[in-house]
Image 1 (spheres, rainbow, N blue to C red):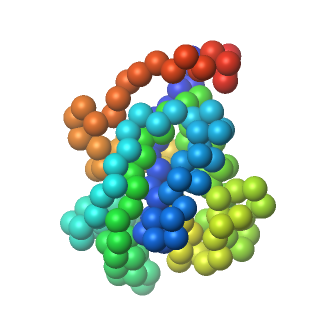
Image 2: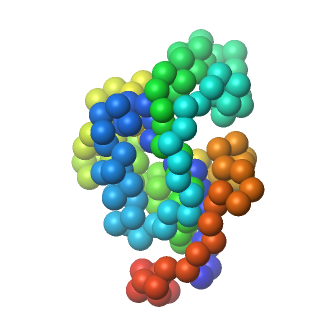
Image 3: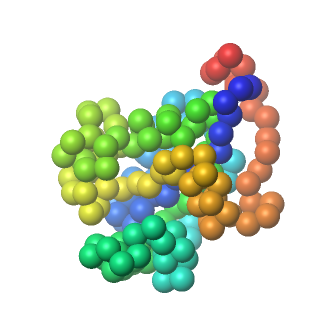
Length: 152
């Protein structure tokens, strides 16, 4: 299948605390995306610093680290045709007030600081972020019998 990508999705602490992980995963699977890695983890400060390294020095950086380390997250490796774009469409705009109805953030979020999910924004970011959250052998290459019914 052409254009198959694997990308990172994090269900952030607010999504886990609000018991929305199942609904978020369901929305991704209903789009036709395949889970190839999944785990519940507690992000420590070192991992948070690596994940948010592009924001070091910005005024909001300490709050990002504090929030992402405040409670467990669900880390997902999601695969499918154009999965980076599909995940980002499914999540909706970063600010839930601007997110379209029908998206995760548009339907379930209220605040930009508590926007439920993170998704990689490029193939390069996906490769880097997946390496932060998944080790060797933790992303599983498997065939799904319905894939031929989802995309050409």
